[in-house]
Length: 339
Image (cartoon, rainbow, N blue to C red; front, top):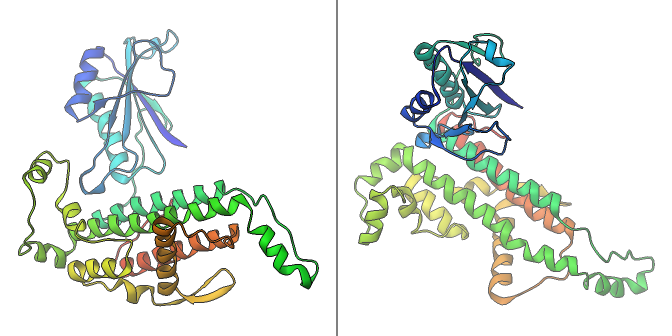
């Protein structure tokens, strides 16, 4: 579902509409839609303070013979974003239309009626909530995709006689699907690492404790890194994060304690039901990370790892992320949105 609104200007050339969009920071792009020949496609996205989720697409297109009667102008301006777009995205969508209409005149037609703009809501988001929401949603989408894509077992023998249980277990262990489940363990850990690494960078950019520490922080960096910072190819936060390994709980905890005064291990030191067992979440995450280490460095394939076992690994990671998000929401009095 999306917001689709079109301005039919009273008087505006393709060039004038194009220059107008460029003045607002729009950039040329390709489009999947099959637009009429001569259409120019543009896109806007605000990276600063994580203001955009979807951005705004804008298309300057030649009007059809049927629609030419609206204003008798040959070119029209179509703007669009999806319903999950941020408040800032929708505000920009309205801004494009409102000021284009003031500049070129004309009639607006779209999802909200004639000469009506997209409704805005009360925005209670912050840079931290928007940044963490984007990270959280990305990880959740990938976890869901992995769950959906997991292959079913090729061999699934069920014991019918206690005497042959060991043989059944041995036969099931030859299932090639179990190799795939093992191969996906590093991917599961990478999602955990990505979430906590990226969240760390968001938090230290805005947290008062971290900002104060930055004023006295000393770190040697080479000249190429200075150039990357100057060209906005790197951020100060990413350089600080590079000093830590986020797939190691001790290193992860050290980063958060030093820069944010947050004890992640304490947050995760809770009993949770994972699969059929109740475990301390911190211990389970440590085991999963160690499991990944064995696969990567020693090719230690566990032939007993089933599809259900792998899903329980993903469940543990989701629970860890959810506990952390719950803590952050209370600490900063924010709401992290889940798609």
